[in-house]
Length: 359
Image (cartoon, rainbow, N blue to C red; front, side, top):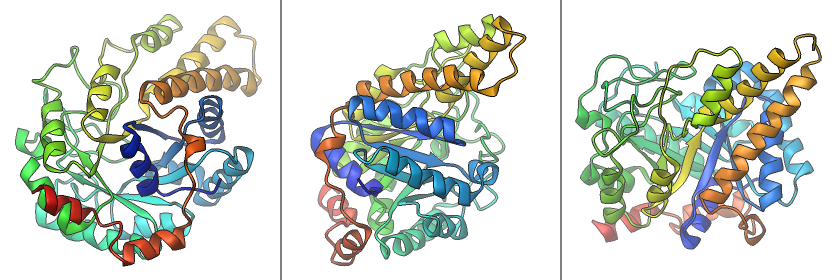
């Protein structure tokens, strides 16, 4: 199959009531682990790349890797997504390198640290949506600032994260404002702020409604039943991964992530894309530490990377299955970008219609 747009993939997920994990990658080993898991359970894939990952791996290398993965696994539809684009230039460069979807995160200014005004967010997201839709690509926007409801702070990831202490109304997306934002920007997916954050140290205790506002997602879904919602910062930080890392020389303090059952709750209320990065890092890091401890004489990187890939593959397969994506790859017929562009131009893919009907 060819690369697929985020919009087409999430439309399919919405029709069938499942969610799609979006895994961040930085290198070949992560890409192979994700696709091996997807192939094993017939799941469509969202591979996303942050600005930091693009700087680390080089755009040319990433583009070549994405093409290679599509050739190795031709039966799997793959969406290639820019995660947390900070301005028009970042999003445009991603499209030029073959990405089929971009996120314009206008919740922060271009410095990726300063919270932006609603007007700024709306205007820049609408501009990127117009640009991407003209070539058939998809756009994810973000309303509300990613950050902890315990501390009021964001956690920086690859240079992206709000600075300072934020108020609760900045950290939880307003449902009424979401209706206006989707209608005005014509985004294909909306990232919701609900108290999740980047990294492993999301919560100091198992989260409840006071620090993980799943009710905000439910309220927004009631108002925008046809808009695809996105949960960022949704690694579950499994206890087993923490234990492996610490057993073999790590020093991670006790921490909690987003419970998988809460993500499943979100999927029942319109969440179609779930961002996962930290869990993949932890799965691999635990194996690096284990091999280094158990085989201190080992110097071949492959002896570290192969078990790390296996651990990440197993994690990815679990998420494909838990979110309901398994078994759906073979049911999707990929629509080419030029046809998607024609549909956007004709207003056949305008989420503002759904927003207006729901308002």
